[in-house]
Amino acid sequence: MAETALALTLRAPPCYSPPMQLPLQVPALTTALTVSQLAQRIRDALDTALDAVWVVGELSNFRVPASGHFYFSLKDTRSQIAAVMFRSANQLLPFRPEDGMEVIVRGRVGFYDVRGDLQLYVDTMEPRGLGSLQLALEQLKKRLAAEGLLAEARKRPLPFLPRAVGIVTALSGAAIHDLLVMLRARHPGVRIVIRPVRVQGKDAPPEIVCAIAELNRVSDVDVLIVGRGGGSLEDLWAFNDERVARAIAASRVPVVSAVGHESDVTIADLVADRRAPTPTAAAALVVPDRRELALWLQRTSLALHSAVRRQIQRHRDRLTAQARHLRDPRHALKALQLRVDELGERLLRAMAARLRSARQALRGGAERLNALSPLAVLERGYSIAHRQDDGSVVRDAASLRHGDRLRLRLARGSAGVRVEDTNTG
Image (tube, rainbow, N blue to C red):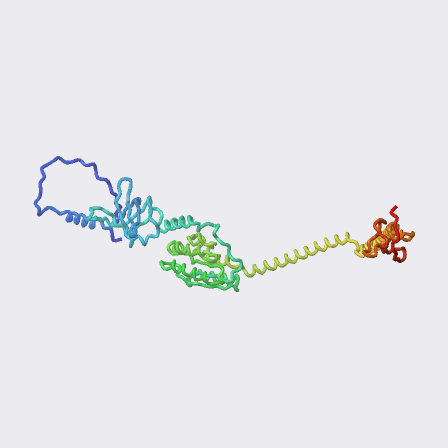
């Protein structure tokens, strides 16, 4: 490091005691400085003496205006100094500074002569105690957890036998080799769609995001494997990128993360539906072993056949038991036929008796009607007289006059007569 590394601790000035008043000695104008000249000298002195210093302190009053610059104060138990970190420098920070965070910064002490402000211009910042990458990782974990992206409840089960497996990784390296070897060994018939990407460096995250989106548009891809082989925290950092995490969470199909070795845990591992400790383990997760599947099918088939045989035997035994309690339906039919014959005979006897009774009643009624019939009266020698002009029955002799013509109704036939005289007594 070419710069001189200094740990700058600002201290408050000692208590001020006013000096004894002496007559003011005004120098000649040629030796007096203007304010601008004094400010320039202060700035030059600071640029020379404190052009590259390292300062440890606690962040305070941290703010980010629309310009994107970081404005804050660095303080310790006794002093503080205003500081600024311009956007061109803070864009490279992997973590987000916050109030109360202890940091170590490198910068230069400058003097802003327009307002007479002393300020620290920061170009590098590191968290104290915890590395910047680790701090950025913890901050992103908290943010994604607050949104529910790390919750187990939102994670989906993997398909039992996918039509196609999508792989997002680099074409070079051991990861793709291990994946292909394991996939072909376990299930040679499964289709594999590889979308090669860079897995390291600043261009890796956008490529991974794009690859996940592209494989989601392939209709028969039912599961994705996203990962790479092992490496340092910096090597794996693309899989700690927030953009990659959100792309995994938004995937249409379940995602298996296979980043690094078993001890490496990235944000992608936490967001993915399943985490595999290695690429080889990821391949074992997404497709069943063909041989194990064949054995399972064989065992299942035998178990099914055995269950069907037991079920058939249970039904056969139940049918046999029920058959013992059943009588020959022909016997029941004969009994019903005899019952029908018996009921038929009873019905005929009842109808005959009913007819005899009806005949007797009819005969009695006829005899009574005959006794009341006027014809029977006529049979006993009586007759009925009708007026010939209107046919009305003559009931009173007083209504007759001499010479009226009548017709007598006899038991058999009739006769015309004329009234000669009447007797009303």
